[in-house]
Image 1 (spheres, rainbow, N blue to C red):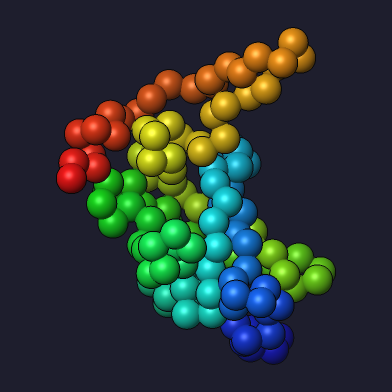
Image 2 (tube, helix red, strand yellow):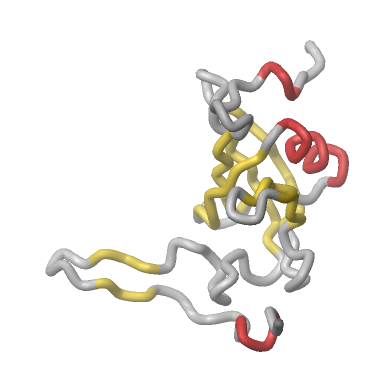
Length: 129
């Protein structure tokens, strides 16, 4: 088996690759984020997810503020090498709004929007400024 080289992935013009984060047990998609080569390295080395924040232009370790880290169990890439699928053991909630998954807004057939899932924490208490 050949060694994995993070540079072999196909990053976009900003040096980023989209990352789908999935719960290992339920297979629920928890979030979509972006990594650059350094974030991929940090994730592989630490066993927890690291991302590149496009809005803040800095690295972020998932759960750094909330304590709701993601323990990496599997990293895979697609056949085009331009998307990662990271399976995790989610500790607490993945969403900064307090839900297990960031995908808790569900468009209904009538055009309405429903919120699925229970809030696991109050963001106002966790992300005090």
